[in-house]
Image (cartoon, rainbow, N blue to C red; front, side, top):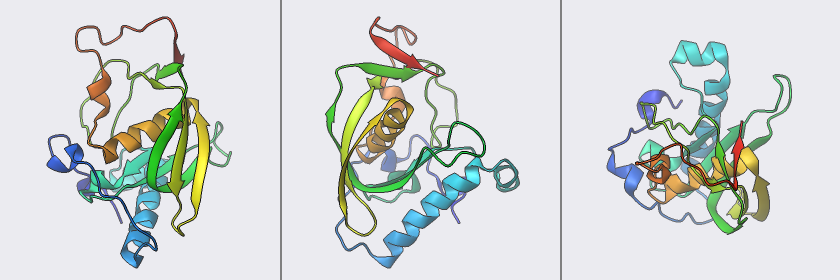
Length: 186
């Protein structure tokens, strides 16, 4: 079971490296890793379990955050209401943004990260719509469009595969400055 102790924190070299492409078929260990990453996200979003296990809530996790150089991300975005099914529950292998909107968006409250133990104020401007190619655990290839919050979460996790942290996008001089055409979400 993955816990907060397994997640590397900012300053760790794994967070600044480009992760290695994965090949199919994936190994049993890689499948277990995917299952463990998703289990962590589910546990982190369960109020009782997260408190009992000392987990911070997360909606995404990338293998490099576990000091594993593999292009794998797990995503678990809750539904709008408590009893709704998840908006997105997916493990992506070798995800890549192949196209994006001209329009940009950011989260009203900024972004956080399981690998960053401090609050970093400022807007993180990202593409508001993206098209992503990826494979599932069985090697099936997909090309899907995502928008809004899901697009932002996916870009955040893909950045981890490329050694980029969310705060790299924050304007250090004016962290809350936005152009008029950026949509603020949340």
